[in-house]
Length: 196
Image 1 (cartoon, helix red, strand yellow):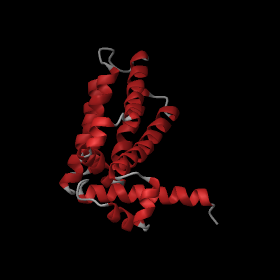
Image 2 (cartoon, one colour):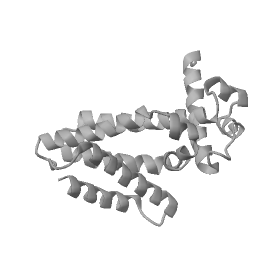
Image 3 (spheres, one colour):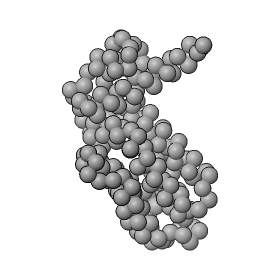
Image 4 (cartoon, one colour):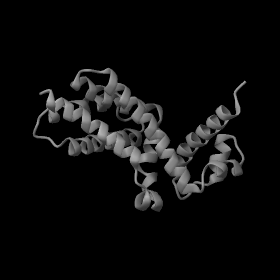
């Protein structure tokens, strides 16, 4: 039998997953806390035990998604010694996550921009951590002679995110018109040619 702390974690994560789906499906402004609660299988008041309001729920959902992305990227960084393979695995991991959790991509790409609190007040530490990791991979590749030294690692990390984000969004919007493997292979060639 699960202990009380584990049950709270499970409920919290269930609410976050439901929030990502509801925000992606209905949009931030049309989504209601009651929609999230219903999908998560909890009472409306339970959501407010964990989150202050809808903006707070949106931000915490984003952080939950970014924690998962950063965990995957850190594992690649720590276990893959090849600089080029790190980039390849990073790209593949993004598209694999997108194919498994398309609602998360829609949330990150569209719905976060609908929250005034997120756009104006939120510091976005999780995203900075993500960019810092990609920049580190590029910088270490430059130091090893694998990547061009003429690139700014920070600018390159933003450009890589931009390419990945836009093409994942295009894949979701196309509703099967494009194969994710085709997109992944094309993006991989563009990025690797660009940084080497």
